[in-house]
Image 1 (cartoon, one colour):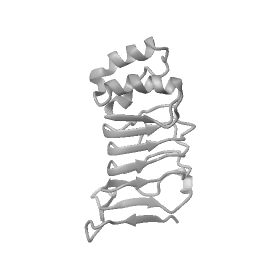
Image 2 (cartoon, one colour):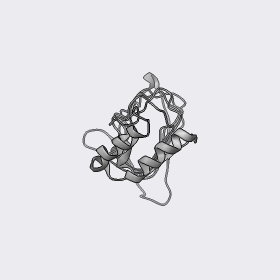
Image 3 (cartoon, one colour):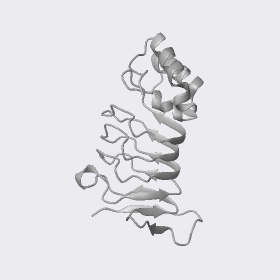
Length: 179
């Protein structure tokens, strides 16, 4: 059994609805009250969440079942995921810090305003160019140098891919210069 908190702030009087394919829409915010889900995955699937969606520190190994659209911020920090497949396709802000097993940004949102993550020299980062604002939570000389390069191309997506890739490689960060 699992529990989710559905928090509403003056939105619809009927905050929950189901899509024809069985996904849950929430007009409000979602925060899990469960510390770990069975099988380390969501027991239900979400469609749209109009507010924030917070599933940090749940021991998740997959984002399958996350909402396709999150109207606010999506917090997936401190989980055991290796990639972002199954995560939101459209989100305002994505907080994905302290994900020690994260190897790939495959599944990174197609539409995103801001992303915050922990920088790693081997993490392919070019997908981050979809975001208009990129923030690294760890601040050191290397992460600051990579941040400076990424931020000049932020929000341009694949249009800036080759220029950013070249700049990262020239600066000595070939592990970050991948899609």
